[in-house]
Structures are given as structure tokens and as C-alpha cells.
Length: 208
Image (cartoon, rainbow, N blue to C red):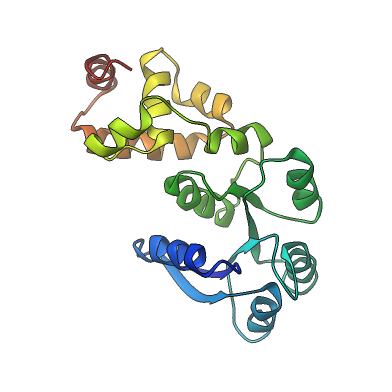
């Protein structure tokens, strides 16, 4: 069980994240807080494995959360949720000890996988990957609706069709090979295929 606390002053967004993560039985949401101070106060008496924090919050912002967690709870992982895809903000977050950084308009699957990777200590921090999280994909909307595919899954299918191995895809996307393998299993299940050849044939059928 991964114990998670969320800090974001946008209530609807925070509740949406909470609802999304509660769909996964391996996650336990310990609390949702309107500012960083409420979150750090909570961590004084409650154990949390992963903190998701916005940067712009009243009372105590996300950088303040990072400073506190790194000093008082170094074993706790911190993932920054940001609406800004600026490299300066990304670098400042990493310099202050963030274990992960994800854009608020990224695909929901990205958040789920990032939490797992960060918690397990195998997350690859890469700014190009951050930008890729929210980049529009011409195939994304239609295939999400028809096959329930995420943006990342469509991207991986395309790379498999183009002949890339899991290891090469992982390097290209700035992800761990284990993450690519997990995505592949999910893709096979959603598309009802059992091999690489069947997946490639399906990709051609889908005009990817």
C-alpha cells in the first residue's frame, strides 16, 4: 500500500486527483490539503510515503513543502504537480529535492506510473519527458474513446510498430524498461493481442 497526501489549493483539481487514485487499490489517500502548511502539519503525526504538491499555494507553497519534507522526512517521496512546463521551474523543483515532476494536463496514466516509479526508486527525471506528457497527439482522442488507450500507450504502440525494442523505447521516452513492459501488458490486454506481431498488425489496422 502506497500512502499518499495531496496539497493543492484548487479544490476541484485536488478532489479529481483523489478520485483518480482511489480507483487503484494499491493507493491509500491519507489526506487532501488546501495549502502546504496543512500538509506538513499532518506529516508531523502521520506517516506518508508519497506527497503530491502544487507549487503555487497560500500560507506555504510547494517549495516550502519540499524544504520541510527533505529536512524532516527524507524518506518521503515528493512529486511536484505543476501547470507550468518551464525548464527553470522544473530545475528549481529538482534542485530542492523533488523526486518527480508532472504537468497538471498530463495523461492520468502518467501520474499513476510516476507514483509507482518514484515510490520504487526507479523514476527517471527528464525534462523532455515532462514536455512529452502533455504534447497533443492526433490519434489520442479517437483511440482513447474506442480502445481506452492513454496518450502514452498510443505513443508506445507507434514505436513498437516502427521496430523499436522495449529497451530502446525506454531510452527514447526517458522511462524505465519495467514501465514500458507494464505499458505493453496493458496495451495487449486492451487490444486483445498476445504477441508483438499481433500488436504490429493491429497498429497497421489502426493506421498508426
